Amino acid sequence: MTLAAALRPKDAQDSPSDALAPLRLPEDLQLTPEQFAAVCRANPNAVLELDASGTVIHMTPTGGETGARNTRLLMRLQSWADHTRGWVVFDSSSGFRLPDGSVLSPDASLLRLERWQALTPAERRGFPPLCPDLVVELASASDGAPRGLTALRQKMAAYQANGAQLGWLLIPHERAVEIWPPAGQGEPQRLEPATALDAGPLFPGLHLDLGEIWQV
Image (cartoon, rainbow, N blue to C red; front, side, top):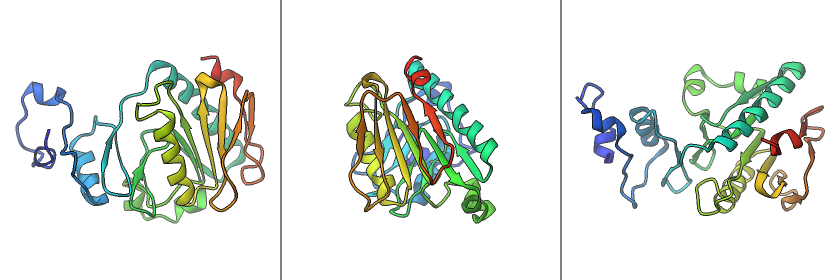
């Protein structure tokens, strides 16, 4: 659908085929975060992100392997958060409005509870205006796809520049991980073969057994 169609009143009548039609936006379209939020509300089934220039990125749904890996990853993060307390876990459907104006959705992320509680109720309901403390992305084997390494490295760099304290880019088909430190603290480090991850002193006790993620 066009942008005009995406923003039309909610009481407008749709035909059955409209619900199945792909989202279509002009290539040169640039949106503010507020306009992007309106497009997302009008297209709840679309998987969208917004880069810092205002360009809409139309993501594709994950494949079965990536979805299963992401579920296991979220289970481990939630278990740690429940035990440690003081953290909130978010899945891949959660968009964050970063300081540079982009709206991105990590596959998994952690946010300190005090930062979450500092937000207003309206900010919590929308795209929280901050960058998570820990962000995780799962790469696909197809580099040309939105979940390919090139695109995800750009996202990791954006998280880093906007305040993430730690980033993990998991590359299952290579059994590798790229560890992205906070901005100004060096270049990403690559572990290959990677069998386990330790999040370090900022996330005490957070360890991941990568073998159970790779084997999915």
